[in-house]
Image (cartoon, rainbow, N blue to C red; front, side, top):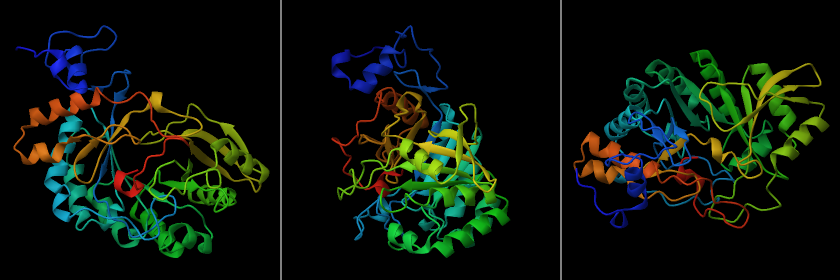
Length: 366
């Protein structure tokens, strides 16, 4: 095959050519493996997050403004068959972990059918979903029966008043019933996600850890990231993970690093074992994208609800797999486009206090 001059090619395609994908020259420091997604930092991409909707029934203060954000027309969202087809291409390239996200994924009509379609894709080792849990009570059993393996449930506080303040439209009792239904349906290795905001729910860490210990959940405390359209992030709201651990210690918790810990689905958390003042024992994770950047270990990419491949949480995606798919691209065409885009994956995120990402988290997929 004739390879065009590199100066006429986009950066991702030039990188692909340099690695011998579609060309003849292979970089000496990376293995040429057509069945694996490997970026220029030699990170193997095995984890795909798929947003199934940009709509949400909550208005969490760390995610979007109280009035909400504009949503895209429904015909611009990927159809279920399109999602399943794209997932198959990623799995063919080495992805083994797939997570369905939103917005709030349980708002997507007939979601159980999509779970069934994705669960049937050979090669997926872990199929999970992140949800706010508001609609989980009635859907936990059908989702489990359709093949969903794990759940991450957002739970920022166990105080009903603060829960309503954080979520603006949420109801704690409804989410707790959803967790009960998930346990009854047979879900295991459930993770609780708590985004910690200074001055709002930073006094609730011990209570969340104790709840996780009672229920057998992994509790993950997440730094508030500078992503949003309302400039809510700042010194008054941001709490680094080190200070979270100090707060737990003040509440009588003894934390021991657990670097060898492995949990289904992997992910960016640094793991600790927490021993509580009443004899509790719980697995804890701290996701510190700002203060303890983990980009060198990043193994994930995101597919937006409209089919845009987003290589990094902080960077706008430019490759519309939806448009290529609807224009008649073959499976081979789609895989080649994915490979080229992933070889252009940035080495590290670009957000910090000086470079916020001005997008609603709900539209990104988390």
